[in-house]
Image (cartoon, rainbow, N blue to C red):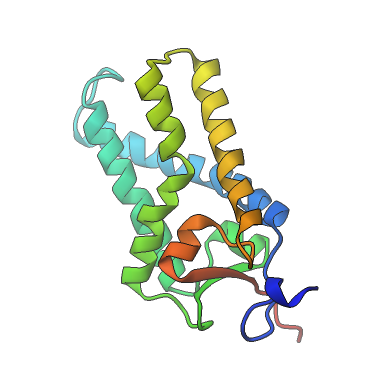
Length: 172
């Protein structure tokens, strides 16, 4: 293990592949959160058509996901997927995140998707294959940026002053 990939307190930084695996697992878990939240929104607003109130639904889901991530990151530094992959988010001094830093990390973590979504919108793409292909390429390009950072951190972590570390379970 090189010194550049180790945390300040000696905690190992998880590899990019392990962080991407956690990212995929997080997406699977969030499917349930989004499904239940969307059902709640459509029930409360009596939405009868998928295109009716879609911007309100998107804003609602953005807030729900923000609450999910900010709460988990500021209360223990791990979401459910991060616990499964033994990854924890801390600040650069290895301290737990406060709610404001967790909120900033959540907002900036949308950098994973915004360039691809912007390109889809600017190019006027409508096919599912083109949209998912653009998102997939955008996520891979964003992940590849981590190899340019000395500690292999993602861009939003570098901007927010946060880092991911390996958090192994305590042996009894």
